[in-house]
Length: 459
Ligand code: SPV
Ligand code: MG
Image (tube, rainbow, N blue to C red; front, side, top):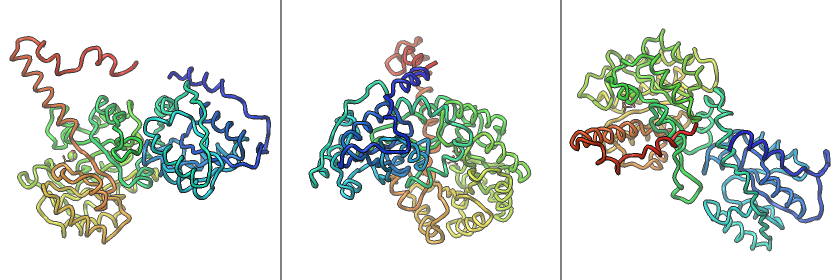
């Protein structure tokens, strides 16, 4: 939908009765209407106006936490959404609805009617509908369904408006907001504009039947950023180039960005890097406590992994924290003790020092396959503190499901390199097959059509 089409939709919204400062109550019946959306459109107003014809309207406004369980965070927070709804003449009160399920509020309020658009009879909301019917029957309430307005779709509006409202401030603050609202934040590598578009838009039906499952955030990996540029992961790709990648990603997406800051370089330089990333709208930088020529952690002790002096590294973390301007930006300390073979005791000791220096979170990295080190660290760390977010990168111990990592106390789970690793073999295979065949016809069935490529990115 274009902006013009959208504003035309607004112009056709039926006007509310001319009552100022007074609510229109036509009977002593009570009506319950659940709303989650940020943006009120004709469909909502039709439902609310129908509700007002039947009785006194209570809106059950889904809390930010409730929305976060089944779709993207609302653009506006609960208090703002509440204020907008309360100002409607046909709305008597707005109460929180704490989950996708209406049951708790319906049992408490026992409304005579629930009003909803008839578009929820199929699809992800049909289970909620079945439950509403069952709970209403407990006290003899009735479900009234209003024909769906059709021409306006909340998800299309969201799709159109979200990029326009994606200011640097809003984007930067999204990671902290997600951390406070979701059991865990799911991130995946994005290394260029195209992969960022995939991470931004891909979704699958939630296996538990609650809306859709999406990625929450993007990881700008040093390994993948370097590899896509044909360079080794040794802090060779400089910050101007890394910023270009970040900018490319930002331009086509709205999700919060976590940047892999390698070692952070010299303390004097790291302060500037923090400011640059923060100004660009990045939400967090993670730096690792290694020194000397950086080697990728997944080499483990096959490469020379030199750990930094913990107090020197703490100073770097602290310098980054002092340099940031906003409250939202996060500086996260990455522990390389397990990668360097120094064990959980060393990791715990360092974690405490980095937290005291101001680290907003701890990333613990491990390349052990069975995940036992990670389990032990998480158990000990969560005994020490419940408050500091922990980031896990389950590349080698990827048999452990996200839910289980979350139960162990992980707050952010990063799938750090999987788009690069799927793209490279696919490209190599195609290149080899064309060489072998002496023409490209043989790969036609394995690759995207030109027609699809042309449609992939709308103008
Ligand atoms: C990266 O993705 O660049 C990381 C994670 O730093 S790892 O490659 O596992 O060290
Ligand atoms: Mg890295």
